[in-house]
Image (cartoon, rainbow, N blue to C red; front, side, top):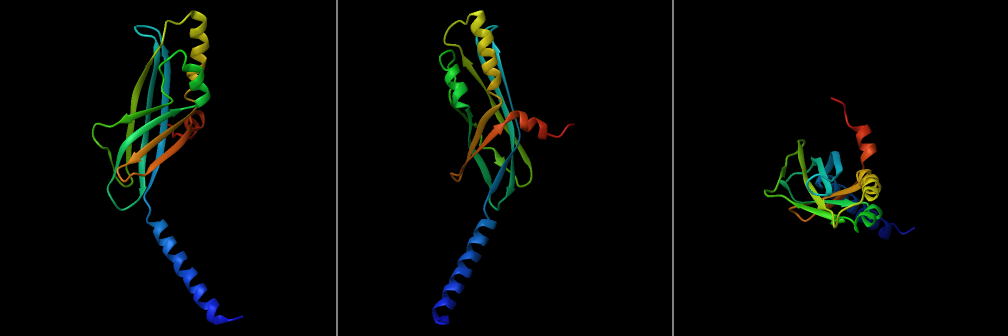
Length: 170
């Protein structure tokens, strides 16, 4: 074996691994905590779906100021297709914040928004019962996404029933 060739290759690989480990250890890291969504089919004043979504972001690791510029809520595509003929419900709702929320290292920042999706027409009693079951399934699985001011986008699929079992009781 020719050590004149192997030695520099091993040294170069060692330096590359060290640089990658250093770069990945200083990456920004944000986690979503305590996601919660409630949905309700309303028929009182205006027929539609009322959606309330709240969650917190936790800035776990990083060295620079971290601001959230956009928040998204995306529904299960199969349920959305079933509701789309009856309601003006978006597949992906964007919640722009008035002021950019600043995430502080180690502190939870609560975020969220409300959404009302009006009905396209009046619903019959049979449709109301069938659609209410579908609407309640919206909270079983959905995605929350956010974009920071540095252009990094993150998504998390939320399985609501699983999240409820993980939340601490007060």
